[in-house]
Image 1 (tube, rainbow, N blue to C red):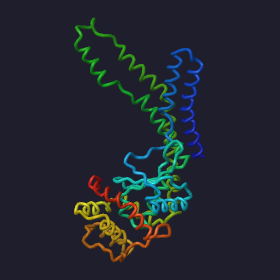
Image 2 (spheres, rainbow, N blue to C red):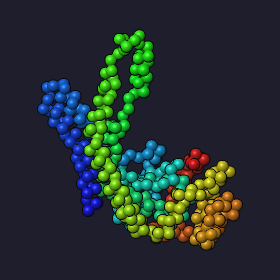
Image 3 (tube, rainbow, N blue to C red):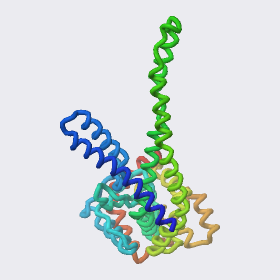
Image 4 (spheres, one colour):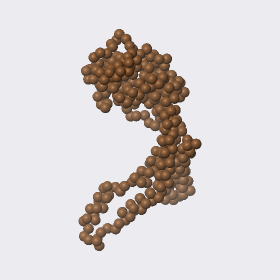
Length: 349
């Protein structure tokens, strides 16, 4: 029941935004011969456009799109994971040099699915963990219902900031103070129109903002109450693709960041991408080869002095979604991007 109420309130917020646009267009059409009608209609349409829900996002500025011909193996992995998760296949695959998190974004007004692969963590993951990272990316993509609710909360936050968060311009306030200080006396002081207009605007904002604040508070509480169900949905979807153990490993790497320091040190020593990748695979194989205590000790050491080299002992054979051979071919496809990315690993904190 709470879920239905949450969705209805969110739809009501979006209907209010649409009402501004419709009303603005109607005023402009009815009063087409009057400049005032066009001005009022234009203001309402602009207000509705500013408060519109962002159904489609944008690609990050540093994301580089990979062609299917140049990264066919990576596209194949992304499509296999999408099929297992029951979601749409990504139309494009992109990479980012300094962001470790992989995400599935919905880009543009048509919400085109685009996979963004974070190279810093991707370089450090074993084949099993790479499949888990993509599973997490697909699972954390919001559904249409979640997108409607999040968009309504963002719209209400814009309303609150516009009605209650606006403050007098600092420059205008300083100018008003200087004018008052330089006046010759009470008979020569300027009027209080500026202060009166500011007070009137704040009063109107609080009167109009009251119902919106109540609506925002109620919708926020309902969304928080539903957060547990959203997390369970995402977890169930991710576990449909890969085992829970693989998901925990990737989450642990993201939370601790312990994968990064050894790669940064190797890059500073001038080691190439193949050597850094071998060391990362050796570190990833330690938890499966030894006890949990040994995995923690390996994460703390992580200095590169006792890595398994190209003998292949303890390496991850992969899974049905991504085998070791396919993972190696993905590395060959991304070699140029790895080489560029490791030069900036020192900027990651």
